Image 1 (cartoon, rainbow, N blue to C red):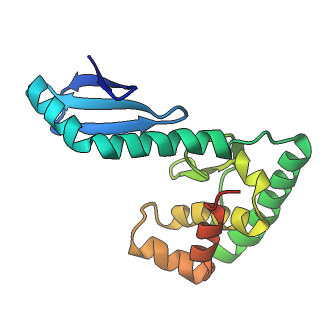
Image 2 (cartoon, rainbow, N blue to C red; image 1 turned 45 degrees about the vertical axis):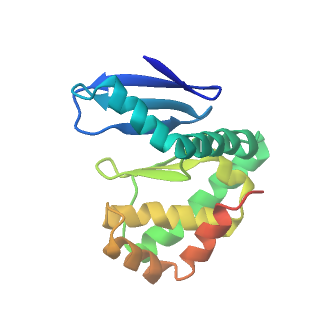
Length: 178
């Protein structure tokens, strides 16, 4: 079922779930609303009306993020990023006494990095190639911390503060618009 808010089409899917969920999906900001089977259309429409401002705001945010932040990365920039990852990995794995089973670079839409705890593989966003060295180092240390603490809990943030005391400033710089 499709519902329209202004010029925005909202896809509504019924699923075996407990709550209504709203997803604003990159790269275009498409909106999917998943709805429990038992909820009436009338309830869904009331919910959407209540959340209309939030939906429109986040749709624009995701759409604009994609348009402004995705840049073409040339081979020289990619090589620079690869070299920085190797340099920082060698330094920080030794300091933190952890070991990743590999690093890959991917053009990711919504994350700067990710870590698979079980395989111990770390993925870094290709868009880091246009960020500063301190931002690349921050993302790498963040992902290595996940090998010590999988969740974003107090222990994780304590580890971040221990290894990289200025991590909050680096995170803020990383997320600034260019």
